[in-house]
Length: 533
Image 1: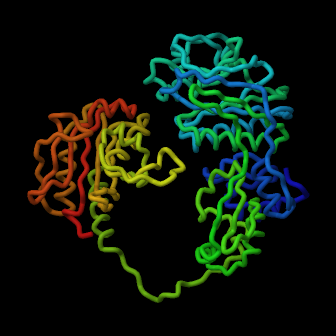
Image 2: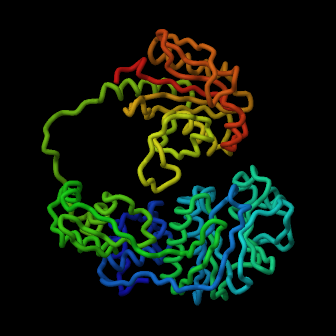
Image 3: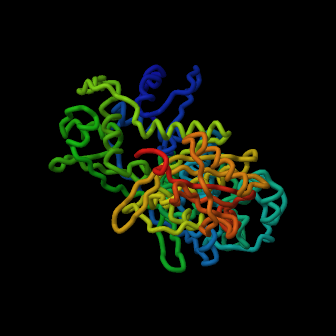
């Protein structure tokens, strides 16, 4: 915790300059909201660690140490097509009370909801190590497999857990499409967890628990390793001794966790230009140290040593932000731009706003998605195109520039299957098309309706009304066959004799790929035929 006495008033003044928001201030506590890209701030341990450096209560610190452990988690090939990755760690000699347990569980759930994408990408289990009999095994079993889930007193089948428990019903959609379910158990058959659904009652934590076993299962290995780094360093800060776990896969073997630091560099001139300052290299090194990043000057660059739990630092601009925080946002002065030119609305954006307002007037809800998507999403949505890939992407969900608006429209609907129907949404944005080595950026509008009887006629009426009211023109539709629509229920959109889009009812296979429960009818149309670029 804090390495010195700090008044409550000083904490109130300082915390916002760490990039945190004070939500509530009382005599007994401060309620803090943090940005999801900093999951290490989910507990008091992480915030205290940042305050120690920012207030210079602690000017030196050591790297996190991982002792060599003896526990093995064997990975069976049966999980490869379900939830293929698992990483793990051991935390020994930790002192738990009700408050520390609450914070550990809060960290677990925040990671689930953030980088874990509501457990779809990553799920975390924290267990009482002392009741386990290693080695452990991660495998897939039949839905009829029985064990006692957390907070229950009798054995239940995995299928019953999905239908009869509140947690099971909430997350059943993550495994329902599989004929077998993932399971983590020990050599005596004791069940640790049914990921990503629920832990076993066997490994419940209590204030008497001294040694922990942490497992993280995932669909993306790097994200799992990132989440484990955050959990392991937090437990280390809480006083635990961290031990490694050996995880042999059918085709490789891992030793986790890896808490080693990595190096990231930022150009001094680049940092000063972004900040509007004239900091020396020495001032930048000091600022980064206050942000708990050891660094050194190397020629015209600053090279920082980034600890494993700082998963938010992936680009030089992130180091610039840390320099600003360490320097002190409160010390930065406002200045006016050098230019005295008067701005005006971009004519293209004015026309796009007209399309947006028209769609909203038709009762459709606007959604906004990233230009980067995962390659798997395009495959699941039935989109086949020449892809423009991101070099060394840090995320499986941001691998390529999207060549179509439909995948993200469908993804939005798939994330909202528990909301009220009918659902009517639209999106305006850019797609990126590669032709003969040249990348073309093109504005498009896409729209979709989803409910039990969504069909071609309905979505056609929305499209016709949109172009008629926004542009005062009529479009034609001509029968065609194109993904991701059903054969015989799709058409190309034609204006002035030229094809400018597609419309139809989404194929059932695509709906199944995305876990959709209702039919979807959708359209996508390029706007260059109607607005000037």
